[in-house]
Amino acid sequence: FPSEDDPWCVLYGRSFATSRETANLARQFARGDNDPFAIGVLHANVGGNQQYEPYAPCSPEDLRAARMDYWALGHIHQHQVLAREPFAVYPGSPQGLDPNETGGHGCVAVTVGGTGATAEFIETGQVVWDRRSADLSDAAALDDVADRVQALCEACRDDSSGRPALVRITLEGRSGVHGLLARGSGLEEVVAEVRREQMAGSPWVWLDRVVDGTRPMLDLDQIRGGADFAADVVRIADELSASEVDTMLDEALGQALGATRGLDLTLDSAAVLERARDICLDRLLGDEASR
Figure 1 (cartoon, rainbow, N blue to C red):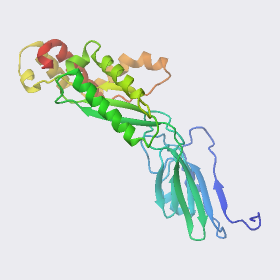
Figure 2: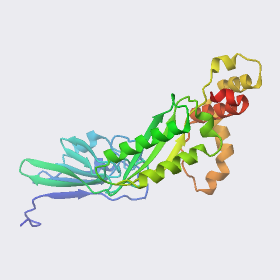
Figure 3: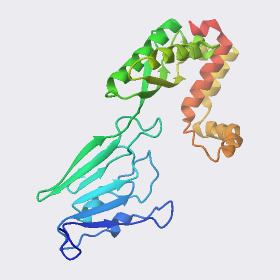
Figure 4: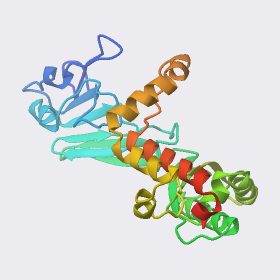
């Protein structure tokens, strides 16, 4: 059996001094010359993953410089094998926690032998988060929308390896059904219909949310060249800069965001401006914009 005097491996770790550690802690790791096998354990953002906080940021080169045989990494919730020399692995989280944590989740079983280490990913997640999108450019009626959403939910079921799934779907494209989705209860009716059918399946699929990203079928160049209010809307949108839109969003949402303690809505100013322009044109042009 291994003992303190005759270990079969040496484990190196480093805690955070503060809850938001920003120092490069990987540079403080160094394998001892007599270590039979060295494992580094570190909660860090390796390589600057923009989807996660930059806690203990470091690079793959920093990991290699420490001369560990295996890096057991935490912080990124998606399973990743960053490198094999040295072996550097994010096991991910055992269960996807929110809609951004799609795909398989689990843990990693590591086997250490005379030739090094091997890592086997073992899926433990009981429910799968999924995101899909549907191009409705050729859709003509709400029934077409329901059919597309149903098909995407079926695809989620097929890809979930027998586990229940929660899916968010974004509807896209300039479409003749834009007006039907933007006004009235058409979208809510589609969601309710799909939920009833998908929850009756096995395994169940819960349609968590449908985001209407469709746009009216418009000839923007033709509208822009006109002399009416719709033309003014297009030209004003053309002239607004991203910084001006960001300022407007800050003014409009500042109080609400303050009440939610800084909720990050991750709004894209260009997408918000385009959406606002198209909604205005849809209202101004009425049925003409939805044909």
